[in-house]
Image (cartoon, rainbow, N blue to C red; front, side, top):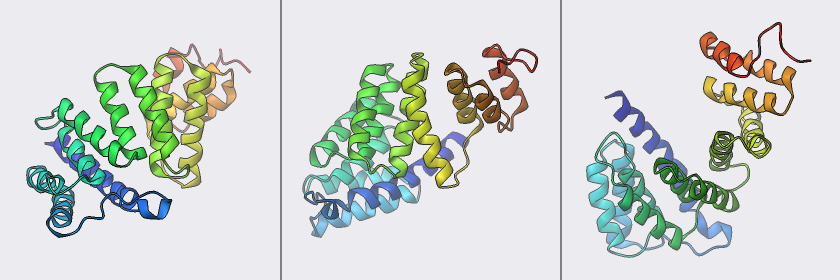
Length: 234
């Protein structure tokens, strides 16, 4: 139950972000992709509302009827979100197809972000890296989407021990979060400290780790790095 509630919250945030970004294509110098009116536009609006209300079944029905009226990057994006719901009957193949159609209609940072997540789920880090980097080429630099793309890239590259590259992307994510006064999770702070440590910035790493509220996590990450208060390099 908790997992389904969390996914519905994710859906709500993603819907708001997509509605703001995807429906504003006309102002970015590109052709607006969701300009159709009548039944198509009505079903798109109803599908979006159903997602925000936590009713993916109704949303899928409206969105599928919307795309029968014409190609819509926004509608296909929402359909992909529904098919990625791991708390329900997810369908990765349908999600991938919907994302490809969304990107074909309008290559948004949001859609490439989801492609990266899908690639990570199927254990394909190379495809995930490519998707995240394509997303950064499309997303506005100061947008929340760009921040998440930088974060995901940082985590992905850190898992491959590509510390310098990982640190660059995570620094961009951290800088954006701090500029917007957004709190970072303990796990992100722990990883950020580890990246700094791998770059031989031990004192900076210790300062970041001191912000980790979970004492157990803080101790475990420091022990994994081989650091204790008496062995920290200066």
